[in-house]
Length: 184
Image (cartoon, rainbow, N blue to C red; front, side, top):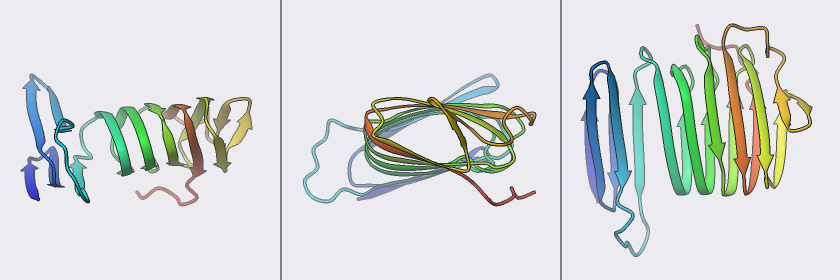
């Protein structure tokens, strides 16, 4: 097992892994790009442990593209100034927390395979969700449902909006509106 750590004022990454890991960082003028990937060509027999802990600055806008194979993911994105999220899920479970106060719009695309996606949404920021595809079941708590569209009470009434598109295979999707007031 190995452990690696990268730290800067923009991001802190700690990874514990049993298979090989590679990363690269490229900085082009004011735009930076970080790529962290796990070598999928290696074969590991037995229990694998691959815990990735990435902590991002809450001061800079961020776009994330996450390709998750099989396993469990916990994406705590509350109060992160995300402007774009592309999440591809293979098999397993992912919990995505998009709650918190948002200053700018967020466009998020989630594509699922087999498993479950639990998505926590804010109460005080406008949210619209379009769910389509072969999604096995959809549960929504605190959202209005019309056709394949789900909205919260704040939709169309706030300066920032979360636009979420979910396409899935045989996944279970749970959309839940956060009942807590965002921290100031």
